[in-house]
Length: 243
Image (spheres, rainbow, N blue to C red):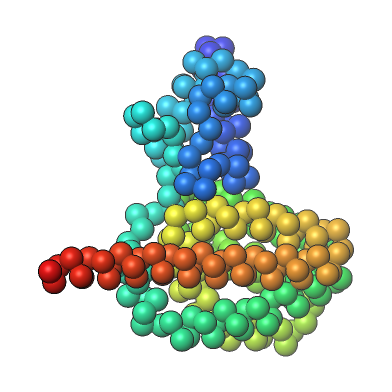
């Protein structure tokens, strides 16, 4: 390996870290080559090679004259998403209400009661969740998110809370698969998990509880915004077809 290739590979890994932290545009666009060169403190030719490496790995897509974009978690199917949403809408909102009732309390108690062994498992689980996002595997992402939240319930040391979580787990798994198929939703969860984990680690129950509430509300907002956008597009298409 030449020195130039080594610099490009290191730059590629640093860009991956940049992506993992969610430090990209709302549309998934990376900073341009010049800005990346300044951020990474390497030459633009090394940045260019790093971006080509990431495109080969399927992490980003380079669009001529537009820039580099993070590849979405899977080929998002709007029709399938809307079919699921329309069929299960009441149950989805009951699920969200139940999550907001249970999970903030679990996070609060976890911050008070988590053991060192559980905390270590939470850290590893979060790292694995990020790795699954980089693999663009929605099934793994959904299961990784499930494992992270299950560990918080376990760390609450409250068996009744854990049992209540188990009651809704199957529906939650289906919900996660649909939500994480929406481009950028999984990436948004990374920074939220970071904050929840940080406050559990710092033994700050109120902050852990509040950040869990915000995490669930942000997830709900992403779901609603997608449903509203896709619903409007379908309505427009139907009106156009009837004219």
